[in-house]
Image (cartoon, rainbow, N blue to C red; front, side, top):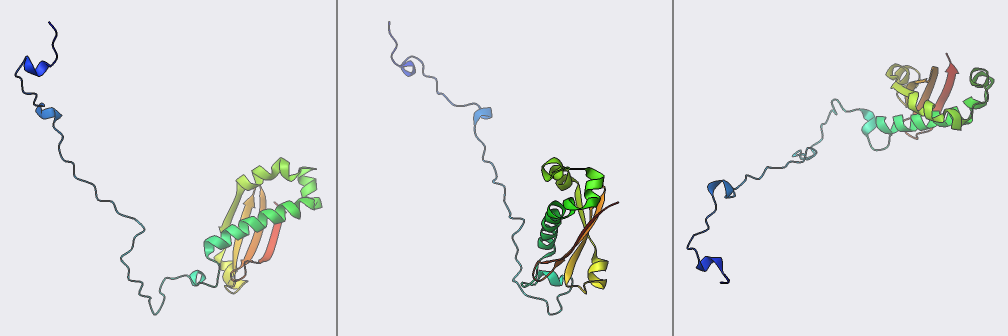
Amino acid sequence: MEIKNIDKISNINQVPEKSQIAKPVKQEQTSNPFESNDKGIESKENIGVDKAFQGDKLTPMEGQMKAKSALLNYFKNEFMQTDEFKKAFGNKTWNDIGDQVIGFLDLNRDKVTEKDVYQGKAYAYNAEIFGMHGEIAIDKKTGAVKKAYVEID
């Protein structure tokens, strides 16, 4: 005997067990951490606002990126040609030491020098590079290098 439809044989209602019934899940509310309900009202006094964030000047982050790039450029193209470098490192090329220089470069902003030496018109940084000391200053308005210097400690 051939069975073509099992429903005709048994009168069992196929109701899922309680554990198999899908329960509605509350949808989590997502929020954008960068969203602001600020209406864009500007303070008349600009309390706590760094003047470098005003449109015609470099931001501190842009200044630091320019300083790092300019210092590496100075190191590669000028400092490595000096007798001081050659006495300490021999005939090493940028390909020999470039990765270490980039990896060990540490820039620290020097706000005292910015105020005293550059009257707030440049970002100044002290650099430690693989046992060497460097200084660099970047003009806040133009991004030009005002000073670049590296010496072996």
